[in-house]
Image (cartoon, rainbow, N blue to C red):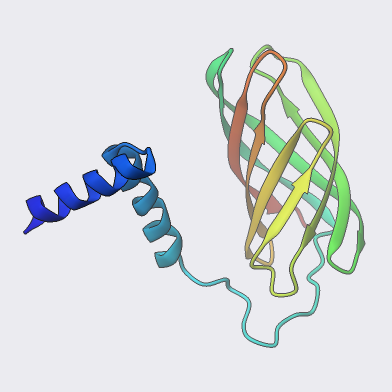
Length: 157
């Protein structure tokens, strides 16, 4: 039965101009999205949460030009109005250069979608706890493509 199903998928993929591997990868991605846990916000919990403050953590980075590296990162959210925010990210490149960039972002009423950007790339965020923010960042163009992900913890000083 599996062989018959695989042949049917392979034939359908050829008709659509896709390889069977590409079709299976797409199906796996859809299955992963469908099985992902629901957002942590409860129904009716649409009050904006404050992101103000300094969040620090570590990030793992892959760059098409510089390979893999890790390092500290911080996000200082300095302004917030309802579900929009603005702040600064600070990190060190693989070459040891300190970088500070403005980031702006927004989130949906139930915080199930959180996004942001700077002048070169885009962020996705997930508030996993009131004081824990996970993120990924992607940037492409210029000399290299870069993707990084990390976990930030809000500092209470």
